[in-house]
Image (cartoon, rainbow, N blue to C red):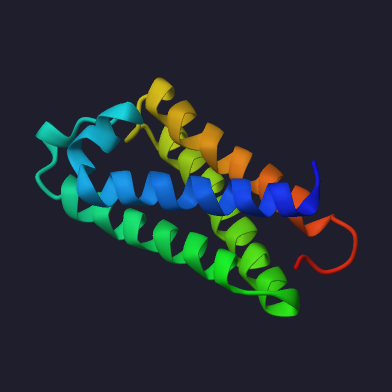
Length: 125
């Protein structure tokens, strides 16, 4: 994947998913196999996630050169942490296997897209 395309893809996905999580946290949680009706704090946590992802997406799009590279690296680190959290939640049993997989998959996809953007020719512009 071309660097510019990968940067736009990862940033755009972050903004869309983050905005959806912030605007409709219960629906977003259900999309990931979670049960927000059983946890009244779920919308708050969804909005935290949403705000974080929108900020990462906008920061990545607005930055250039080395600054953009740092935004991409931060995103890869966060997505990797999210993937590990999904595994830990599945193993500990507080996420059912399907839900753990549904939160793990986009985190790993985010890592892959972020790495693709970082591996482009030189520093992303």
